[in-house]
Image (cartoon, rainbow, N blue to C red; front, side, top):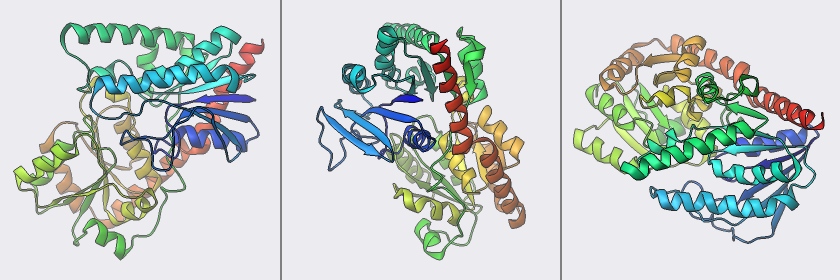
Length: 411
């Protein structure tokens, strides 16, 4: 097939799903052309060594990549985020008719939904079908993020985004969603159930894999011979980082809690740990991706958290796949599909979201678990990842959706 892939986020950014999908499809013999912008995630600035220009083309492992300019922003300003999304929608739509000429089907990575603009134009001009890969539900992820306006303006934005997403969903030949509950939520909005498929995200399997723990990595995370729980990834507004800090502060003799990463909530998290006098909570900041498997192996558990919001029950955060792929046992404070996966796979310990007392109890339980039981959890989690979430499994499903979309267009 000749496949067009449209995504505002693309390697070398940490949003690796579009890049790995493109390369794997090319490895399988497909002609893959990517339309994206210049890397700026997560700091909202164009990466050093890159210069935004109009006619930028490159070849990456058999994939032709065209980058178009856009306004880079990833801060807490809703207006600047909107400017970033809309600018990519404009420039990608201008470039799409030529760069994606002759493709049989399109893959669009969402969010943001404005990435669909170019696909919508090609559907109108040439009848090209699209498979939309839904990572977040809009408008919920916007209206609960703290960046949306309140009052009348907020309600107007909610109505606009709801109507826009319905139109996008209905115009696509197929929708890949990242969790079963998300599939149900999309279908409730009037989408044909036959067009929706649950495709769990995979992780970067070259980086996240089982490795032996080393003294150097244990030193890096400050392991001092007691149970160490690591939270690795985005310290954002939806992760409930404050819940973890309060739980750790309540049981200072049971566990050490280590945060690896940064995000919009990082400074507030540090302030809370200081206010609580939580000496067993440490912040390492961002670390190179190449170090993460070693850091995972140096900790005893990986902590996965989501706020108690109905729409988040259909979310499987990427840090879960990373932990499972590394064979790390999981401590989970979440509800919905992510929690069910861990329960069914017997891959970790769970407690309800937004309940620091329950999480503190689980910290104590985790500290008391025999080593052989913890190691067995990690092995089962690794098997769960290979069976249901791996790159091979995910690309098989998206390739099938694209094939059916292209076949439907020909018929």
